Amino acid sequence: MRQEVDTDKRAEMLKRKVSGNDGIMREQPIAYQACPASVEYFEEDTKELLSKILSKENMQAAYRRVVKNGGASGIDGITVDELKMQCQQHWPRIREALLAGKYQPQAVRQVEIPKPNGGTRILGIPTVMDRLIQQAIHQVLQPIYDPKFSEQSYGFRPNRNAQMAVAKSREITRSGYRWVVDIDLEKFFDRVNHDILMHRLWKRIQDKRLLKLIRAYLKSGLMLGGIASLRTEGVPQGSPLSPLLSNIMLDELDKELEKRKHKHLRYADDCNIYVRSKAAGERVLKSISRYVEERLKLRINAEKSAVARPWERKFLGYTVTRHKEAKLKVAQLSEKRLKGKLKDVFRRGRGRAIYSVIKELTPIIRGWINYFKYSEVKGLFEELDGWLRRKIRVLYWRRWKKPKTRERKLRQQGIGVERAWKSAYNGRGAWWNAGASHMNQAIPTKYLRHLGLLSFMEEYQRVKVY
Image 1 (cartoon, one colour):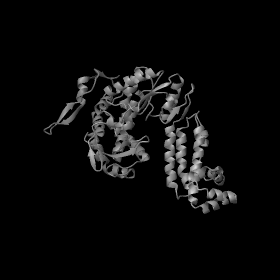
Image 2: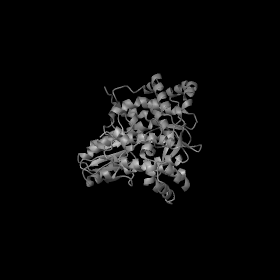
Image 3: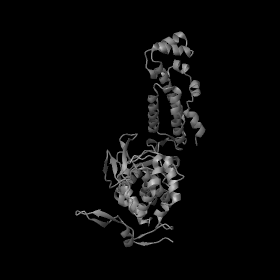
Image 4: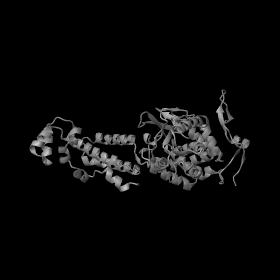
């Protein structure tokens, strides 16, 4: 049976220590908005979750996952390869501190990476030991929370993925919801309110030691250039626990949208609401913006959020056609990002053997096609094949450098003497020549396939869903 817990009694569990002007640490209750008169819990007992988290079986599973995931080291410089030795030397002491509620996580290393559409994204890289502990927490909390999450949430959940969300978006669009409210949460991971998140955790976790540990992770500082800055809000991206915490935070938004009977889909902080008219979309955007800002203490990015046709927006790299029976296709920005990634490979490929460049291209092509296998518009894949072959022919043309060398190479590949001379001395650039008939004849598609070059179209035909 679920238990109803007296609010006053539970409020005692949510006192935090704050420092007064005299430096003395005192307990102060955390204020929450609209705290319910009673709180319902899951049927299972959650008073001893930390002991379950630190069990041998769970820690071993967490260790295997952390090692498999790899990743960079934290502020202590200890790598994943050194985690086993660190556990052998320090785990008994760390485990004892965890059970006693005295463990203090280390600061996370701040790393800034460029966003595809401009700006930077802040990542927080915990130490491998903290990654191990967070992974162990995740493995125990995920089965508790996930069954209660909304069916419209697809991000970072077992047996769900981005392609499933995209397929659902096509289904909704086909059913007559041909306007979308595309909501962009401004710097969501940097602005998660700790008190609101802890309140949501408190409603379902009875283990005070675990609550204290999670809050310690939320407050652990960000270190940049040897200086650690105190964090009062946000969940740093890059930790094993942050995806689950983000879903716990935004599940309230999902439930509110369901309560209002809206058609919506959410993948992490990407949220689309589907409506039948522009006027309805504008009303929804206004009311949901107010709800998010007042209830969740988050911000809507007014510049990036919009009410538009689904085919004018992208969702998880895809978009749709404007047909009544909408079809999925690769968004233009996704194509641009792919070409940017491939251009980096070609830039590094100057001076290297062509087959080694092709070998580096192979996993990128396969991974990209595997993600976009739900696309129903195949024209782009044919265009990408032509673009890719032309980029490789550019490498050949530049490698031959001097006109005399180009003339000789073209003649070796079966081009006539006069035509080889004219082509070699035409004075045009590498990109033009790579698309000209003499280079297509000298470096035919069959030869590039022999070197191992994959075809976007053939890979798509092999794995396509629709």
